[in-house]
Image 1 (cartoon, rainbow, N blue to C red):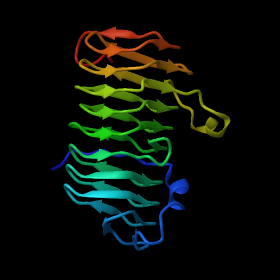
Image 2 (image 1 turned 90 degrees about the vertical axis):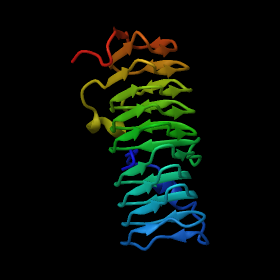
Image 3 (image 1 turned 135 degrees about the vertical axis):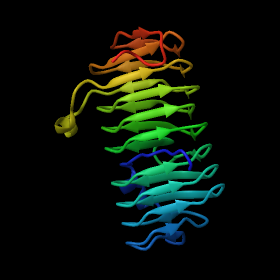
Length: 220
């Protein structure tokens, strides 16, 4: 079975109006296989076959499943999950080349690539041997980086805004494991628990004090 990305995306509502009427549209309650061009649904799931190349795929309450070695220009869902197989790519250029999550978790495995930044509000971001061309950004979510993961644009943990005041929870836990490389600044606008392996490479840190650890995972 493929190893997958799971991510619930906020950006659908802004992107849905950009989908051309000439592109494929999923039926309101049916699961569909994405065809050439863009594919949009409402309550059904969308499947991108292994090795396929597609445009933007989006749904409101369903899930998006992207097969092994497949690629999409963007993937969006409000309340569902997005699953991306090993060595798949997602270059989401609809909002500054970013993927934005709300409450769902994002997990990247085995050489998966994102062409822009990865942004989360409350969901966990977990990457293993993944490549992100932009930054990792979150407000309340934990971040866990392992293996040969490389982040080009640094890490930003934002201070919760009044719009998300009811979502705020305990300090996020940020783990940067052995072999991970994070280029750029690591900036924290709120309290976090930051654990950095002695075998990781990171840029300048602002707003937090790294806790160094020597094993595969931090204590606790």
